[in-house]
Structure formats: structure tokens, C-alpha cells
Image 1 (cartoon, helix red, strand yellow):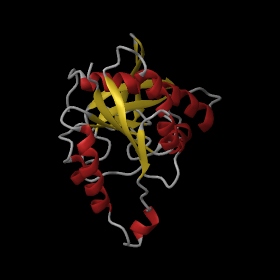
Image 2 (tube, rainbow, N blue to C red):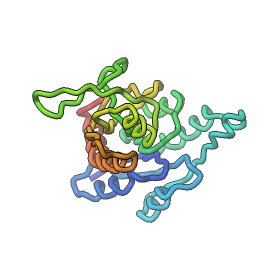
Image 3 (cartoon, rainbow, N blue to C red):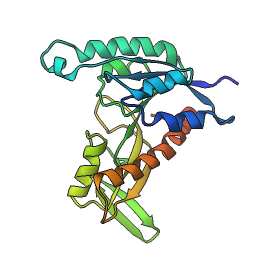
Image 4 (cartoon, helix red, strand yellow):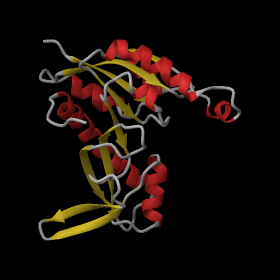
Length: 225
């Protein structure tokens, strides 16, 4: 059976073990074809290679960008051109821990087939400042939306502002950050005793649960951009 090719864009690669475990299931209809990290070092790249998956570092120097020495546009164009040959017409690009905001030129190579794992709850309506969580049939809780933040920062803000819930969202990627159509959400209650570390541990477990499911939903055509 032919399986849909995935390109996984990572930072350190903490989501790879769960994806590797999931793709070993006989019924899984996708395979990790390539892994790329924008960091100078990435355990995830090494893990991919150990599992027979092609992987590489495509380092992007944020400090050099600020000095005007490197172009994000050119980096994105070259990366998009190279990865589009792997993804083909029916594969998918999955951003999982990828901290680099990609411009429209990158997305243009994939016809909308790019999804992102965001470390907070995002709403269905892009303009909304809150997302509703329903812990029970009789209770709905409004949680402030956190956009444009990375994992630990999102957890830190949620704790500082006294949010009742945290969580994770998988969504389609658009040129505007964190407003693409929601594919799947996973809510995680915040406990009074939580620290950034304990909250992060529970949210990361939820990420491992829903990311493979979200990939299945997109490749089955049940949720489109």
C-alpha cells in the first residue's frame, strides 16, 4: 500500500517519537519521508536518521537576519522548492516545534498542505480573543487566546494570567500567524499547583495524542483548508 509522504519540520524533535510509534501501525496511511530542523543542533535529526529517515539541518541564524546578513524570504524559497519535490501532490508538511515563521513564498509550494502544532488553544473564528472549553455538558469556560508564542512562553503566560485551561491546537498554516482553520484541539486543565514544567509535561502528552490524529484527518480529506 502506498503511503502519503510527510515532511516534518522540527526544532529539537520532541514530537518525533510519538509520530514514529504511530507510523509503525499497519493501518497508518502515511510515512515520514523527510525531517528538517532549523536549529544548529537537533536530537530529532539524529533520531530520524537512526530510523532510516532522511533528515538534515537547515540552520537559520536569527541574529544574522537582524543584521541583514541573511534573508528569510530566500531561505524559505529554497526550502520550499526542495521539500515540494518530496511532498509531491498528495503529501503534507507538518510543523512540530518549528519556531521559524514562514512567509507566503514557502507556503506557495504546497497548495495549502501545511499544518502546525500550536502550544495553546486557538478558536475557530480567527478574530476571536477567546476560545470556549466545555469541561461538562452544563459548563463552558472562556479561555484567552495566545497567538505567536512558543511552548514555555505560552504556559508561563497562562499561569501568570490565571487561565483555567491550557492545551494544544493543530491548524492549517496561512501567511497570517496562528489564524488558519483549526483541525483539532486538545484541552488540558491547569491545576493550582502547576508550574511551567508540570503544565508543559501534560500538554506535551496531549500533543502526542492529537498530532497523529490530526494528520489522519487532513490526509483523509475530512478536514480541508
